[in-house]
Image (cartoon, rainbow, N blue to C red; front, side, top):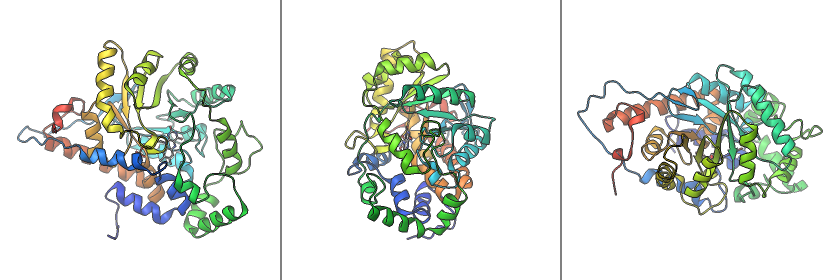
Length: 391
Ligand SMILES: Cc1cc2nc3c(=O)[nH]c(=O)nc-3n(C[C@H](O)[C@H](O)[C@H](O)COP(=O)(O)O)c2cc1C
């Protein structure tokens, strides 16, 4: 294996994260559902897309900046929601917020973060985070969370729609990370944690409290993550429907994005229900294994929305398998307005904390700049299918 002195790519950060994290936590982050065909399919499909090289077009001045979600963005990228990011590094969500703001982009905090939304927002109030919401059975608590997000300054609410029930993740089952906890499982997990003393010191000692910071009011007696998890597992609501999106729209006056869209009709319905945009996503291949890679659905969804809602204003976001700046360029050329990073930023966080995310984002920005130059493009907003080789 090549020795990594300095991480050059997301794959390098993945390898460093694997060394640094206890096995059960690395597998929780890296894994997908069932046989992980969609999880790795997302990356393979992006890799299969060929960019079009153009030359001699004066590329001395390249613009990556754009305006999305009412804010100027140094590049059309945001850090997507990753549950339990605080297990990757000490107060991980705070580190992600600081890195994102420093690089001129937004961070989306998950409902199931370790740091509560207030702690994340206060870490870098210049640019409040987005907040990702699961519509849980306890609708009063959902309203309470929305109020907390609003009070913390959040202006974009991301409603995740592809988790009505939970996809089974084989790695988590094997590692005893999910399911009922027997003494044997608990002991095996404990040994795994102890064999990573650097992680224990950084996260379990210095990163306290290890609780779900957004759910503290829902389960006030919970003292440990498994106790919170029990509540969360019981709160997934398979009855959630479009009426709930209408209800959320009625109760949220900021930007509203629906995440987990992989179908043209669902995309249209989301905008008709009042969403300001959709995020084309298959949850990083962690839910329905066997669905199409997200990049293969993106163009179709863009065309459908443009045709069926010609006068609607909406943003089309994309995630799934993005490892570098070239992947972002491909998604933008196929119709995305912006891209969310998933595992890529969490690997960097696990490997090197905030500095790792900063480095990853700077490298991505540079990769995008170089790709644009070699494609003969100067403005990121001008990318389109003319930048892709037709196969
Ligand atoms: C460990 C992990 C936790 C996640 N937690 C959430 C979450 O809490 N809420 C959510 O909407 N999506 C969650 N996702 C999905 C990501 O937001 C995103 O859709 C996905 O990771 C994109 O794929 P990529 O990791 O291949 O880039 C999670 C993904 C991972 C890998």
